[in-house]
Length: 223
Image (cartoon, rainbow, N blue to C red; front, side, top):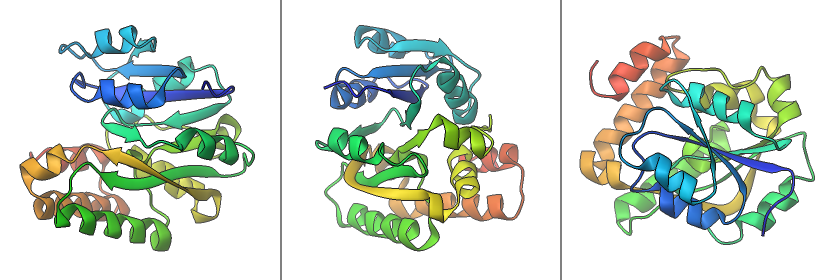
C-alpha cells in the first residue's frame, strides 16, 4: 500500500540486475530513480516499474541530491539499488514517520547464507549500536526539515552516507528492526575480509580528513 507523504530516492548506475528486486519489494510507492548514465537497461527497468527517472552527475551524493530535489514527499527514504526491504518495512516506516525529529535506518542483512555473512552482519549491528554509524546500504528515512537543518545532502563522490549521519549525530538516529537485505555479490567476488578491510580503511581515511576523491580511488582499487 502506498505511504502518503513518502518519496523513495534510489541512486543507480548499471543496476539492471538488482533494481527489479529492489523495486518489487517496495510496491506502488512514489519512487525517484537518479541515474548517472546507465547503458544496461536500468532506466527501462525503472520506467516500467512506474518510477520517475532523473539524470545526475555520477556519484551517490550528487545523484541522491538530484533525486531529493525531484521528489515530492516531505519524508525521504534513501535506498541503494541492490538493497531489498523485507516484509514489514511499510508498518515500520509509518511508525517512524510519527517522529520527524530523528532519521531512521533498517537492520543490515546480506543475501548470503555463509558464516562470513553472519559475522559481518553482527559487526555492522555493533557499529550502529555503539558508534551510531549506519551506512547507506541500510537505507535512511529522514524528513526534509531535518535534512535541511543539518545542511542537506552534500554532492560527494563517496562517503556521503557517513557524512550525513555524522552531521545528524547519534541522538537523532533511530533503528528500525526490519532487515534491509543487500546483495553480497561484491563480498563474494572480492572476499569478505578484503572488502571489509578496504571499507574500514576508507572510513579511517575519512575521519583523518583525506579528500573524498582520494578515498574514492582507494575504494575502487586505484589508490
